[in-house]
Amino acid sequence: DTLSGQIASTVRWSDSIQYLLALAAARGRDMEFVELGQGEVLTRMLQTIRQQTSSAQLEAIASAERLASAGAPLPAAAAATAHDRVSEWNR
Image (tube, rainbow, N blue to C red; front, side, top):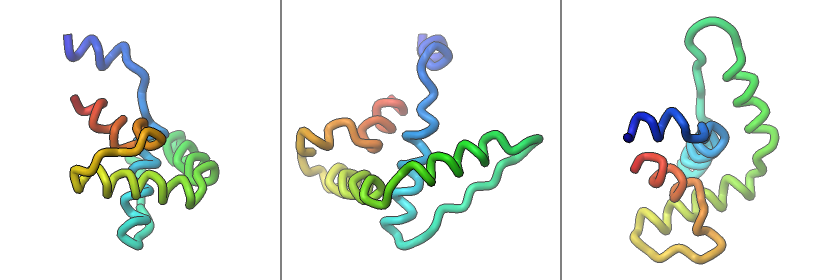
């Protein structure tokens, strides 16, 4: 059941990349990604996501992550943050 659900579910590539970028930004670092294998499809997708994600969006994701990590209730506006989506995805 779990495998069939994963196969049939949407890939949350943008959410995952934004989450990683926000974690790096919160630590004052730049995230480095390395694509293995042939081609540069994922690298180009990553570049597009970086260009389309503002620093304010990354800060909002990082803030929600800090709240969630501290066990604080999330405000309604942050209910669908990358942290929540990644947690749901991992469940």
